[in-house]
Image (cartoon, rainbow, N blue to C red; front, top):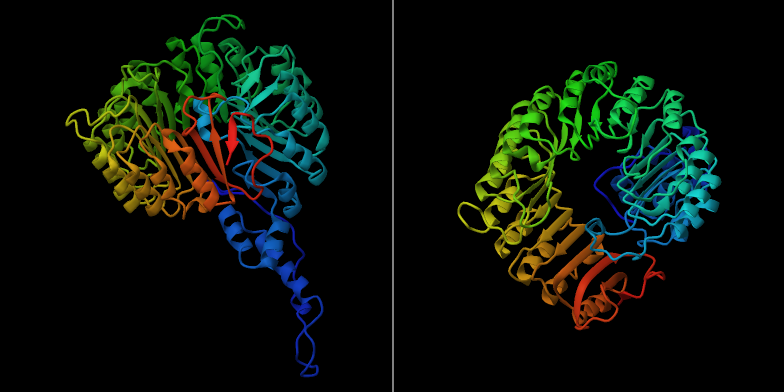
Length: 605
C-alpha cells in the first residue's frame, strides 16, 4: 500500500471513552493490580481519536507508532487507497482493514497512457473483487484507475453490494455497455457513475434505460463512443433532482443538450457533447435559444466538452462565464480570436485546459483576465515531434506575469528559453506541479542554443513547494544536479530524452529523499545509475525505465540485493535479438511478492 499526493477522507465510530473507566489507585491497596481491560480501554480511546484523522499520511504515521495503534487505526479506516494493485495481496488488505466502505485502486503504470505498456500486461480487477465481496458487503464507493475490468466484473459488483452508490472508472479497459447496464439496473442507490477516459467496447446495449436510481448526483460518460437512448437519458435527468454533474458524449447534439439543461437547471458541472450544428439530431437550434438555456443554468461552475465546435455557438455560454471556476476546451480546435470574447468574461476562472491552437495571443488574453488561475494545461493539437506548435516561451512568460497564484501547469510547446522558465519560477513560486513538455528530442533554448539546464534549475530553486516535475528538451547532467540539490519535496519526476550519463540519475536518487515515482524514457542511463538508488527503492512506489541503457545483469543485481522489490523486465517481443539489453523495466515495492498473472513477455527477476 502506498501514498499519493491527494488526501482521502476516512472516519469511523469507536466506543466513547468515559473518564470513570480509568480505575484509580486511590482508595485501594497500594499494591492493587491495574484495572482490567486497560489495554482495551486505551484502544477504545485511540479509535475515538483516530476517527477524526482524514489525511492518509497522518493515519499511516499513526499506524507505525506501535501494534496497538496499528490495530486501532485499521479498525477506524473507512477509506482505503492502494496505489498499485500488486503492492499488496487482496487477502492481506481485507484482513487488516475490516471496516472499509470506500476503495481507490490503481493498476498499470502511468506510461500505459502513452501505449508504452503492452496489451494484456495485467492489472485485472477480478482477484480484488473476489476478495471484496465476502469481506465488505457494505462497500459504498469504488474508484479504479488503469485496471482491466470485464462486464462480468461489473455485473458481480452490481449484485454483491446492496448499499453501493459510487463508481468511478478512469483509464480502464475490458468492459462495455453490457457491464454498464448491470450497474445501472442493480445499483438502486447509485449516486455517482463517472466514466473518464476509458476504452469502452461498443456493444448494442441500451444501458441508459436500465437506471433504477432516483438519487443520481453525477453522470459522466463522454468517453463512451456509441450513441445512447436520448429519451431514456432525458427521463433519467428529469427524475434526478440531485444531479449536479453531467458530461455527455459526442452523440449528444446542441439540440439535445438544450433539452437536458432545461430538465436540470441545478447543474454545477456540464460537459457538452457535439457543440456544433452537424449530426446528432435534436432539431435546429438558434444561438439565442441555446443562450437562454445557459442563462437559466446560473449554477454552472465547470464547463467542458465542446467537441466538433462551431464557433458561432460560443456566445451561448456568455451568461455563465462570470460564474465559471473551471473551463476545459481541450477538445475544441479554437483560435485566439474565438477564445478572446469567452475568456474576457471568465474573471473567476481557476482551472483552464486548452489546445495550443490558441497560440501565444490566446494565452496573453488568459493572463490579462484570469488573475486567480490555479491550474493551466496546454495540450498539442498535433503531438508529433516535427509539428509546428503555436505556443512558445512568449505565452509562458505572459501566464507567469498575469497568473501569479498558479499552482500547477502542464505546457506542451516546440520552442522554449531558459529565461522564460526562470521568469515563471520567479513569478509563480507557489507552484506544486511544473510539467514542461518540449516536443522533439533534445531541443535547446531556441534563442541561445544552450541546454535548458538553467531554466529547470531555477524552477527547483525558487519553487520550494514543488512536488511534481516533468523535464524535457536538451538537458545535461547539470540540470539533474540542480534537481538533486534543491528538489527536496519532489515526489514525482518524469524524464524524457535527457541527461548525459549515469551521474544524472545518481544526483536524483541520492538527493531527493521524498521521491515516490520516477518515470524515465529514452535517456542514456545504465546499470551504474540504476544501482545508485539501491538505498532508496524500498521507499519509492515505483521506477519505470523505457529505452535506456540497462542490461539484464544490472536488473538482476537489484533483484538480488532487494528481495522484497518486484523487478519486472518487459519485452515487446518474446524473442529479441539482444537478450542482454532491457527495453522496459518496471520496479515496485510489494508486500505480496512476485505476481502470479505475469504474461510470457514479462520476466520477474
